[in-house]
Length: 102
Image (cartoon, helix red, strand yellow):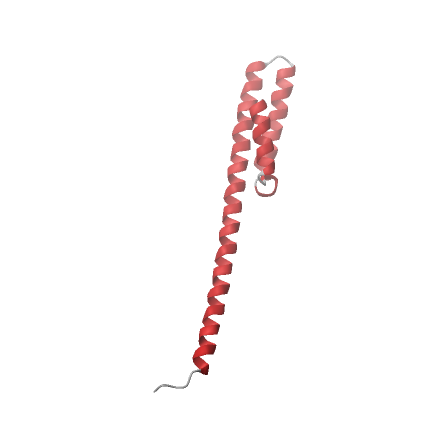
């Protein structure tokens, strides 16, 4: 259960609440179920819930990382397009100032 708790905390720090809230909530629910089962002495069930909570926390982390990477890629692409446009405008402006060499 400690591993699941640690993975949930890592997912939270990695932005999973913003990008993978459903997976993170599922992991939290499963961890609660694991703790409840452990309190009732049902160790096998507690271990199953804890394992599933860990898997879902890792999934939330992976989805958050992927979403952040997509967002960063979009920002870089947008910046590249902006720079390309500025370079083209500058090039056109400079060529307009040069005397016609025909």
